[in-house]
Amino acid sequence: MAGSFRDMDAESEVDEDTQANLCCPHPLSAALSIIALPCWLTSIRTIEQNEQAAVMTWGEYRGSIVHPGLQIINPCGVELRKISTARQTLDIQNLKCTDARGSPIFVSGNVVYRIYSAKKAKVDVKDATKYLHEQSPMVLRRVCAKFPYESSSGPSLRGGRGSMEDHVVGNELRKELQTVVHDAGIEVIKCDLTDLSYAPEIAAAMLQKQQAEAMIEARELVVQSAVDISSAAIRRMREKGHQLTPQGEERIIGNLLTVICGDRGVQTTLPV
Image (tube, rainbow, N blue to C red; front, side, top):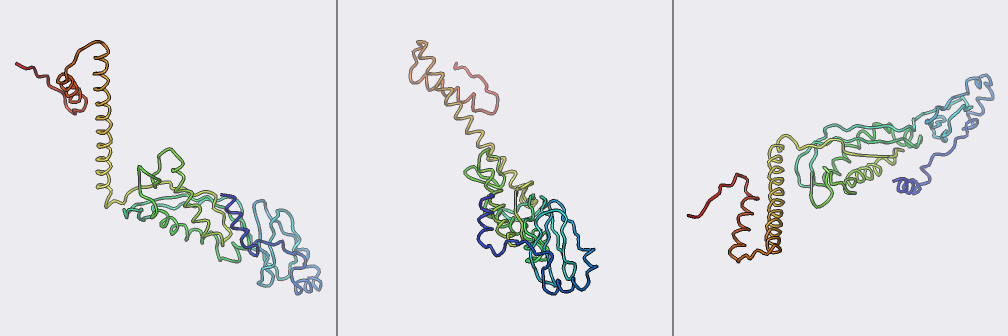
């Protein structure tokens, strides 16, 4: 993830923040500060840890402050637009969309991100956090449309297969969202689904489908086990010296299959 993020950032070096000249950011600022020397008494500013600032001089971007601590800044015509580089989270609650099969679903997600560029967050876009809030639902809808709600043969929104496929959806979400918000100076660290459910209009029908699929899988397991048990029983009887006719084997196998596969109690019948 970090490697792809660095590659994306390296594609356009002009977008990288440059260190601002704080004492002489503009000729006009320098001239005014010399004329009004007492104004330098208000020139000391503090940049906190996990904080950056874009330096605007007479409305023009002149660079950024990327290191925390006390900074001496020309007070004439200079504006600082600060951003926090600490990690933040965004919750997306109950977003209605469709999966790859067209079924309406409700999804919730959580995005962990940080702002890494004061220039992009405060100059290139109006509000980086609002930009992320508005773009995230659209990306989530687009990614959900690529995967089924659940699947036994590949990655799905529900996951739960206990393999690397469980991370496919989250990785796709992070990748897609990172591409969209890169120009706003945002690094998407993690993006996961936190809740998933069918929409009410199809929830009952999909529950019946899940129950039917579960019953079929259970029946297949019972039948497979019954065949194995019957074959093992015949083999053990032969090993112990019992002579079985083909008709006897068929009768034993039929009785065992009936007992094991039947969902009701078996009634014993005797020939008269």
